[in-house]
Image (cartoon, rainbow, N blue to C red; front, top):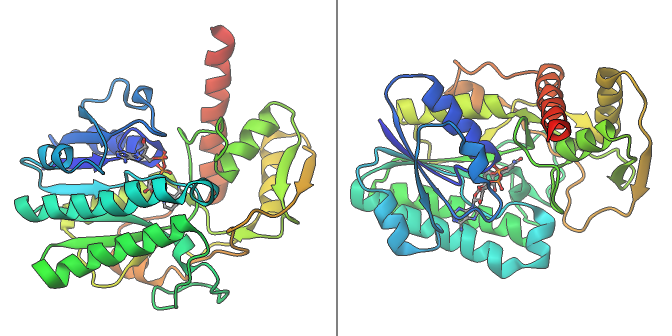
Length: 315
Ligand code: NAD
């Protein structure tokens, strides 16, 4: 199978490249990435064909899909606060980029899996979330994801294209960067805790998330492309867990064997209070996927961060 992974130099993308190539089943992997947030070093030692360019560039996308059986479309500008600061950039990369991917996929009849986001539920406070609950984006980022997943699903009806739209919840794991303004909460907290710095908590820390380990996401994405799983409705890629940020901090303290201080600041615009999937459809569609528990995923992620520290000190 030849697979195009857009955003393959990013956190989830590079883990997926490693997951597929480590299977040693002869799959070919092409990565299309513009390095806006991803890093070439994430692909070090991985046997991929790398195309440097943007999904917003129609010509580049057409070139990238040649001979491809499946596309995992992860290439996008992530982060709610980034989109609040620059909504147009998010729109261009995430919405125009997805339309280009779909148009190119149509030409070569490639299967498309798309990474939407739990942020599409936004102002809907019902918990846990089913895919049939109403959506109300609270940020430009969430709007781009809702619009893009609507395109992905509409292409099934309009053109008979085989597609699947996953709504990722908070994904974490090795290779997730902590060193930029829009870093996600787990890498931010781990990096801070390992450097004995106070952890910045937006709001009271009672907000909760359905954290999903990156390897669970990769197993699910690979199962989807292998079986060409199609659904006319989006699928929450999370398994129904709920962890408050204060409990996450306690878990980090337990794992590191020392306490950390918390610095509470104003809540962030566009952030949702609680996010949890009901985990029903994912289990129906992917019974073979066994989710990695937060305890285990966090241990592996800490080990990766500690490895980075060691390399940093040796330099
Ligand atoms: P990431 O920022 O590490 O990866 C995104 C990748 O896309 C990067 O390598 C970046 O350089 C690339 N990219 C950005 N704009 C591009 C463009 N115009 N053309 C080509 N490449 C482009 O983020 P991630 O956490 O790995 O997220 C992957 C996908 O999953 C994204 O679509 C994101 O919106 C979605 N998602 C992630 C989470 C999460 O918790 N990490 C949650 C919900 C949805």
